Length: 96
Image (cartoon, rainbow, N blue to C red):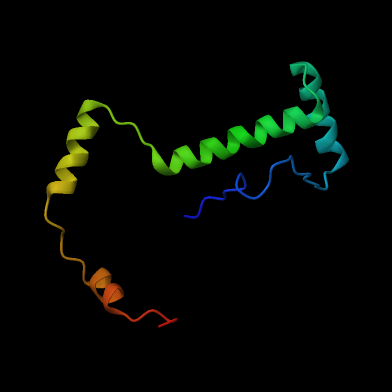
């Protein structure tokens, strides 16, 4: 997965434009007002939190002791025979 590194290219803030339905904008404005934030700050905070959560869900998982033991046991076990997987792995990719 490529991580965008804008720090080396851009030294200033960037403008992001988007189209929003009126009912969506009303809801966002109401929530932003209740939080004491501007629309921009509210949207940016929400988008940032969603981005962090998405990345964490793909890189971090938590297990209790019992789950950790089961996870390690599964990793240490020899793989089961899977004919369809074997065929798939031996099939040449369409782009090759």
